[in-house]
Image (tube, rainbow over all chains, first blue to last red):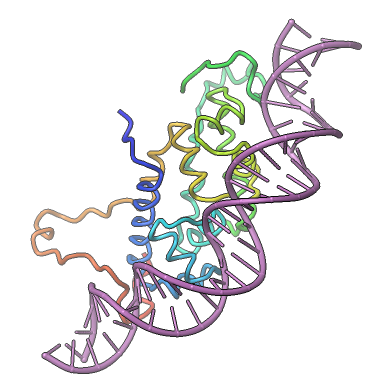
Length: 103
Length: 103
DNA sequence: AACTAATAGACTTAAAATAGTCCATTATTT
DNA sequence: AAATAATGGACTATTTTAAGTCTATTAGTT
């Protein structure tokens, strides 16, 4: 079942997590902004889900020591060593026959 | 050891993961943009790490079925049931004594 | 209870992203 | 190998965010 949260709600909840991480380090928004190299307003926007850029997010995550999280988006789908031998080079573009897999 | 990648590099690698997810579903950028409710350019920006908004990212993630990933940023730090009883309400602001924990 | 400091919100200007369109390039198909 | 379709890149106008500053509120301290 899809949680059917709106993008706005999701941004707010996401911001709460960012705040959580910051508070665990016990630094205020101003300090975080400084360390991350963004404006105080950028941090406010992120934590309150009021709209932000991916760049601001990345800088803040680095500053919070959670940059590694960004690498966990697309988990590797492992294939057996035997199959690996005859594995084709991965697609670089979507193929013509539409609507296929649904992973 | 910090990977010391620049924010720019990180955005590019992140975009490659987004592309990966899209290709697993075998849909093209145009289809993804439509489904997500963003412009084709927004998808291009995301996948090529050329700058994007958090809103665009959230919409695209939803469309790719990876909205749940957004909830995994700040893992819960569990405490024992006994300690839970006397647990104070969590901080809502950073405290005065600066530079403390380093989680 | 009074004080202090962290955060929210509004405002302005500059910078950046979105949306829409067109053309060039290149992977994939046939 | 030729045809087709997916993607990259550039461009313009519009919208959104960043950055900087100020004020109001309120959590946390003393």
